[in-house]
Each structure stands twice: as structure tokens, then as C-alpha cells.
Image (cartoon, rainbow over all chains, first blue to last red; front, side, top):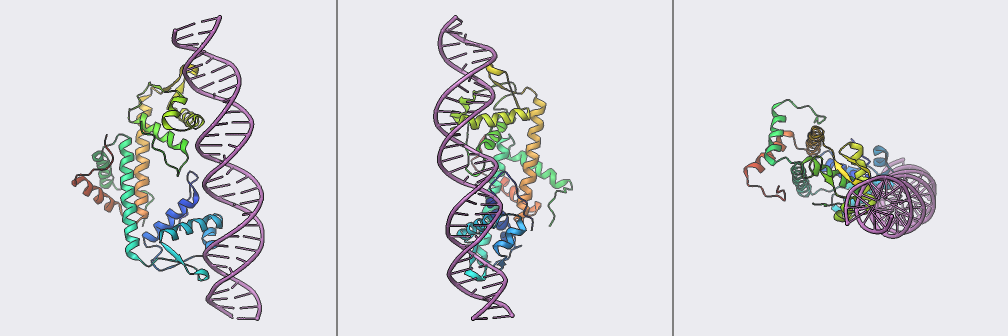
Length: 128
Length: 128
DNA sequence: ATGATTGCATTATTATCATAGTACAATATA
DNA sequence: TATATTGTACTATGATAATAATGCAATCAT
């Protein structure tokens, strides 16, 4: 897992974001067992309390549930997972375009920039 | 001016972002006088200290300079302003695509989503 | 039954952020 | 000259975040 954390936003929020992406992209499959809090915290290099807070947030969202001492599991509601995926994507697109608009780029200009990216062979750090 | 602030990120950072967008999009023109710290703080509904910090950050970037007690002015280096604009745009595009990739959308899929947006008449809250 | 693992709660400490309030030096402006 | 405005510095306070360090109840495996 990546666990690439920044210092400009609350860590627990970033953890929620990363874990949600893992679930929504299927890298953490529906119904799958989630590693223990302490384990995840160690992987991410954060305090267990911080990871615990992130996981608690995700349970409130319905993305996970916990069977007391047997551990924590990703929800099995694939429909919900996909709905959240679409929602996040939609939000990000809107936010991205709004931000570009603030910079003075029209939607058409943004579209053309991406079009250009398409034509050229674009290597960013986005493999697989 | 907009001054739409969120609670999930340091306010002074958001102020830098908003003011930079203002300059870069020409709404705060090169060489133009910037309102006083207290004035800007009142407009944005934040503490003068917070606004002061944001403005100090922007001077460090070279986007503004201050003539002691006569006030603060936007840089006149239009070339620099445009370079920063392009840089921010480039960063945002890369960040956006990387984020969408994490959600499981390929660049082509993202491109098609935007294409779809282009075809349909799209009203978001993004007017000029 | 015993020990290990699980989620979870608790307390304390440190750092950052935002605010409030005050003050001062330099300089336009009247 | 007197006044107001400018940027800037300073101290203090409260809230939030992140960490550290324990501890406990429930349950699973042995």
C-alpha cells in the first residue's frame, strides 16, 4: 500500500481517503478482512490512535463494520461501494474544473489541455 | 471577492490560494495596489494576523512587494505571473489525474467523462 | 483454561492554527 | 504640525491534531 501522507491536511482525513480509494478501486475487496488497527498504523507509520480515528470515521460512512474482537471487514454492499466511487469521481471532476476556472481556464481550454495530453505519450507516476 | 473558506485546511493557506488565483487570473492586476491587511481581513472574515501571514507568504513567493507604509502592491512581472499560472495548472491536472487513477479510472476514461460533459450542456457553479 | 489478538477507551504532552488585543515605527494626508 | 493609515511585532488564549503510553473486555486459537 502507498500511505503517502502530506503535512498540509489532517492525517486521519488522508487515511480515510486512501483507504476509501483502496476499497472503491477493489484493492480492498468487498467483504475482505481489514488488517488490525495496530498493523495498519505500523504500515502507514502513524500512531494507532490516528488510524483508529480514521477507521471509526469509515464505519460511520458504512464502508466497514467490525465484529468486535474478530476484526474489521469491508462492507459487502458492492452497490454502495460503486455509488460512492461515482460520487467521489463526480465531486473531484467538479472541483477540478471549478479550480481551473478560477485560474482563468475555460472548460474548453481544460478539455484541450487534456486532449493534448492524450495525443502525446504521457508518462506520469500513474501506472496500473 | 469570494473568500469561501473551508475548515479542513489551514485558513492562511487557502487565503494564499485565493489571492494567487486573483492575481493569476488578472482580477488583481499586475502593479495594482492591494487593500490593507485589516481591510482584507475584514472582507474575508478572518483575523488580521491570519491575513498578514498569508500576505507574508506571498511576498516570499515574489507575487507581492510592500512599500513600507504606502501599502502593498502586486508584482509587475507579468511573465512571472503567467509562469506561476501555468505551473499551478499543470500541477492540478497531474494531481487530478493521479487521484482519478487511484479511484480506478484510466486517463482515457477520465477524458471520456469530460468529453461527455462537453457534449451535454453543463451547468455547474462555474460562471466567469 | 491460558495466552494472544482484537477493538476501543483513557490520560497526558506537544505542536500548530486561529483568534484577540495591544503596540509601534514609518509615512501619507490634512 | 497633527492625525490617520500603513505594515509589523508581540503576548496570550482556546481549539484541534498527533503522538505516547497504558489498560480493558471480548473472543479466538492452542
